[in-house]
Length: 429
Ligand code: EPZ
Image 1 (spheres, helix red, strand yellow):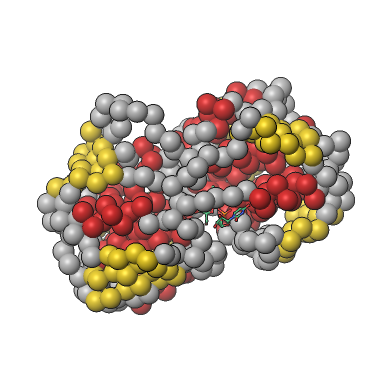
Image 2 (image 1 turned 120 degrees about the vertical axis):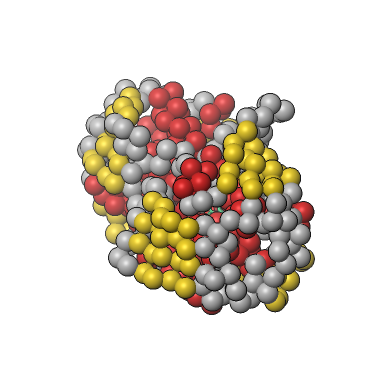
């Protein structure tokens, strides 16, 4: 397990370019197998999750050609397997999107049940209910989900909870179903819109992405396509929150301001200053922040993925702030670690009360998932003294060059390779 050694009390200053969206890429790569022709993708983030998906695609028989660091050509004509390798799939939860895409391509899929995770329970009942409604037979045996069909048929599906994963999986499967599918109470995240644009570029017919209802007219065949992945709004939000937390001044470039409105609003409430241009946002703060309440919700609400770094911001604001996590049951892994750095936080159920305004002090801390990792790194940059952030592999999964980008803003971060203690269970995407 590698670690970061961070010398703190740094105000982040300068500009940073945002990479392509992880959560769009991890849906779009599995979607590429709907065609047999070549798909060219640009602005693909160079992160561990994408590297794992490339391995899964190659293992299934796809041909992948890298064109530079952030561009890929995928030619899945020679796909010969409908069962992604367990060793690869277990590394990342989003590999369950192969359920939808393999079902669409072959009429069958055999994918391991996504494992336990660090954000609380994460059922997939809505995915399975949707596949069944399209006419798939589902059998769960020996830890595998076996899906098969003699032909998917369009249907009307109402999701009981708003789920990004279920929306993606059903968009994939329904794109190849006969007739019309109507998905109701769907996720509206920009990554869903990006996936719809990509599938439409391949010949799918998807309308309404970005609203509560998506209508899909199934296509008989799909062709090659070119697509540029949208910027990562969560990465952008992470740097915006980091700028304000450290009392710094950061220009965040290559961002779509509409996608981060919940974050700009929250930052303004805490007294941070912002200048918003069409593709860049400058965030700065003189270091005096006001407390605020933060509630996570599906898009366009405040994203749960930014709740951990949002909480770090509130530890810097003098007074009482309340955080309510509405999306996941157990997404407070970072709290005990922040307490080790001196934060005063009390958690009751889904609510965390933060008595902010204490200067954090560096400490050894342990990362358990991607966004907690980002939060602890920001806390360490703001804290007095030295911190040791352990198990940073979680962060490599989802942020391209996170330490380099932070170092470019003045942070003092050193990566130290550590011995492999035991295999980590990494499946919290
Ligand atoms: C996606 O996970 C993201 N992952 C997560 O990003 C993100 O935290 C999460 O959405 C919420 O925004 C990807 O896009 C790859 P959900 P997902 O299905 O799809 C419940 C990150 O750090 N639910 O929208 O797994 C579920 O338990 C990650 O980048 C059901 O009850 O989340 C949760 O409470 C981690 N039944 C809520 O819905 C189901 O069948 C939302 O989950 C499916 C979900």
